[in-house]
Length: 233
Image (cartoon, rainbow, N blue to C red):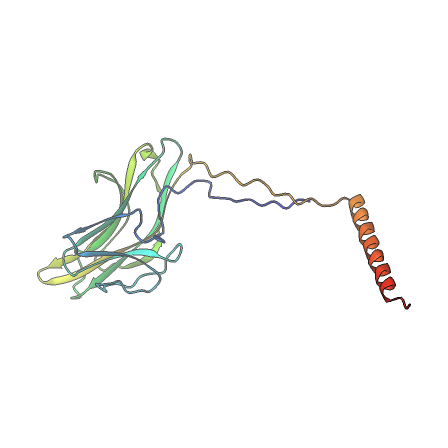
């Protein structure tokens, strides 16, 4: 009987770097319009965003952290994105978790606030919308339906999340997008090879008998030595 040890991995590698924001914003690009109006933070559950303090974070769906955006109470547009190059072959599938935060400061329904998570090309041309929410239709961070991107194989796609806050006639609303566990798998990317099996041999009956005899002989020798040591002169 043998004991086998393997070092396994998912059958299709995730092409997204830092997919659950456990390393903060590493590998992701941000933009703020106007400049210096947005914040992007990787937070655990129920933490208030800083410095604008408009939202509380949700429970991450993977790992200890998830991304949340915030902005000043102006008509700010906050974006975060990552470009991913798809192999030419295989099936490409995108899965992610997203949610919507809004601070309706003047309680007028936030009609022009909203968030969206999209897949575009690197020029910004829309390929598909993965998630969208507007006004006061707040939604906790949650997994979204999978998106098939196989038709984009051989190209570079952009996974981009946008939060649009709103300022209309003195009324203010602050929108925030939450994002986590962004996984873009392609089946042509081979899983790493399993480590070589480690085999623990089981002694045969004859080997057990030999080991037993050796143990008995060793015990007898020890007993005789002790008798000689205590024999009176």
